[in-house]
Image (cartoon, rainbow, N blue to C red; front, side, top):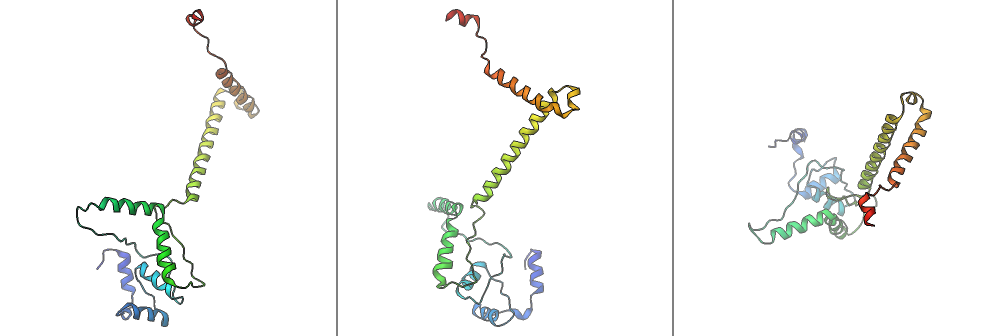
Length: 196
């Protein structure tokens, strides 16, 4: 019995005659009948990688993680945890899994099967990060343009606001004024002049 409604609905639709005694029988039924096998993803990938007449449907029904067990208080725990997290973050676990699980043990490559290394949620994809910076830069440019527009509109006289022809000259006048203020050196105090 499960508490998940999706699993309950799936179980209710299963044919009661679909039960099999073992995986060998299940694989034979998949090959010879119109039979779909629900199984943990690593098992399915194992069988599909070794038999070109089988295929896996994209997507998973659920997600299960595996762990490493050790005695409580073990001094290795922090080192193993840090190592596994580092390998996962770099995407190395997925690369090693593809190499040893899919390539080394398959022995042959099926012409229509493509083994794709799917990065974990912790693996950073350059394209996605790149797009984030593009949107961020676009937002900054847009906000600066709006700020400049509002500043110049406030500097314009009431009559000038109704005629857009005065916008650009007003903008240029404000920019020149800003640069003149920055280029003009501050007047030194009389005490400093007397000391020189």
